[in-house]
Length: 397
Ligand code: ATP
Ligand code: MG
Picture (tube, rainbow, N blue to C red):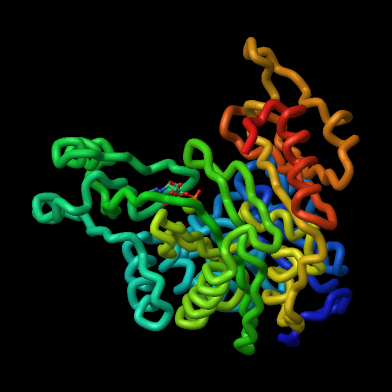
């Protein structure tokens, strides 16, 4: 195969095409970035109405394990990526036999499993000084009995398949821990000590196949009900020493993984000022959506570049930015009746950039879109973001 895969090239008689496993909003924004560079795209997703499938040149509507669908994907695309970590590792491995695939299957397998993820973070801590939360692995009654008292109160998290606070339970006592584990079906879990958080942040990096690593600015994140609500990115959004430490720790994590592609690492800043590494996502991340409007290369542009083997100059943020997640509850009024959010009033605000994902059904907690406010300075952007929040009925931050 010719490498890099140049946009607009004709390969074996067909236009250069990039594929993505998963057709959600992350896949949709990947498709936007790939198409804007001049690639054709192909999406595989079991949902006929998937946000990315609806805008892609080609859409294969099938299960991720369907061998015919994987063959068709490999036949259409020269390179394939994924937009969520819970894609079956087997599907990625199958594609990797004949196609360029990033991220590497082995790295996705680590990020899919909190136990292995935490072990990787603990190994990296020796060099970076940034450790994961004190925790214990729970896979048996014996593990449960051996949990040190210092880990309570804590958060029990399933090792696999958790997202947006799902697969988690806050536990105060050994009895609560035992019953929470029972309720989770006694699957492999991690119990983490409940930490006193001052704030949360994340860092997105991209690493090319040649080892080049570039990084986006540190994002400051506010979660509500276990779901990202607001991301703020501008100078001094967090103290600069912490920002530097988070950047360095993220680079170390991605290099030690031997990763290729875009990766996001989430951090906690504790009330005593210490930085703790929480988890990683082997893909673009909700906290990086502002990059589409506020950076010269978005996280999705970086995903396309790492997948196709294109150069990776350092991305630059050109505007201060605040992103508000638009969850399904905004599509209902106080009485619970369906409504259309007041877009005209929101779009009247300077620097407002609306992104809707094309999902037909709004449900509380469902990510329907996001709104990014950009501008030359943090104070101005904050003012407009608070106005937008008020007009939409989002709690102030
Ligand atoms: P994501 O949607 O980011 O994948 P997730 O469901 O995998 O989320 P986490 O990121 O582990 O879960 O936790 C969700 C949120 O719960 C965190 O952003 C943080 O606000 C809170 N939280 C998680 N672990 C801890 C902890 N050990 N101490 C205090 N708060 C925590
Ligand atoms: Mg998280």
